[in-house]
Length: 251
Image 1 (cartoon, rainbow, N blue to C red):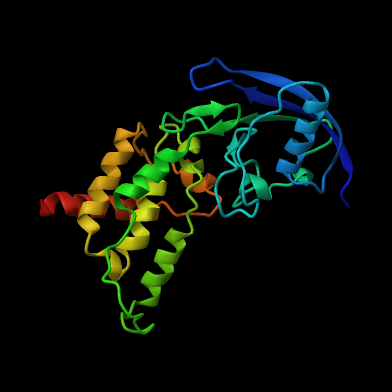
Image 2 (spheres, rainbow, N blue to C red):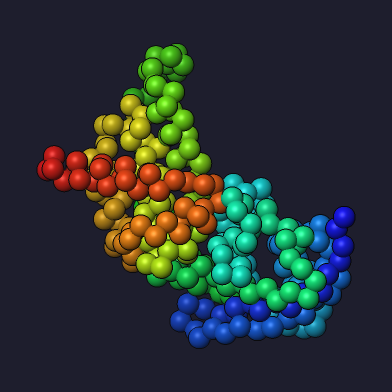
């Protein structure tokens, strides 16, 4: 049965990307363990507004675990201590009475802080823009079985496509690498016939854009896989490497 708890929050506050940030400490009492983590932050902001203080800026949208916007680093883990969930799916029953909870924004060169806990994640959008699409001839809708795809390939492609682009992989990586994200987006297309046409150009373009935007290299620590809310496998990184090497050899 859920109960109410008292907690201490250490929240990162930063006025802008070029401003110096610092942790500020807040106390919350009678927090329902049945509430979500984001609902708890709403309560904190109501308290701050009533006190005449600036509310904490954080990002969120769908609160259904599919948009990837709730990018919070909680007690040393992207999205918090639970596995396979985003921050919006994290509930306060995961925390104990009297506990201190540390909340930070993503820490990666590719995700500069906008304000407080909100970061600029448009770097991932830019990576998608240079290669995350397929060219098709428009016309009538083909029959579902017009392009036969082995079930194993279809399942792997769907698993890769479940990536929501939240950035937890880069935040968890000691190098700030975006390889898990890029490899998932490359894999979901490379495994399907529709993605073969631009396969070589896609792998080179997306890797080049990733490097340009300041993300680090992969050193196979697998922290990205452990912290990914959608359980994206690092086997996709191996596939990306193969696609990239094949594209370079083809040149």
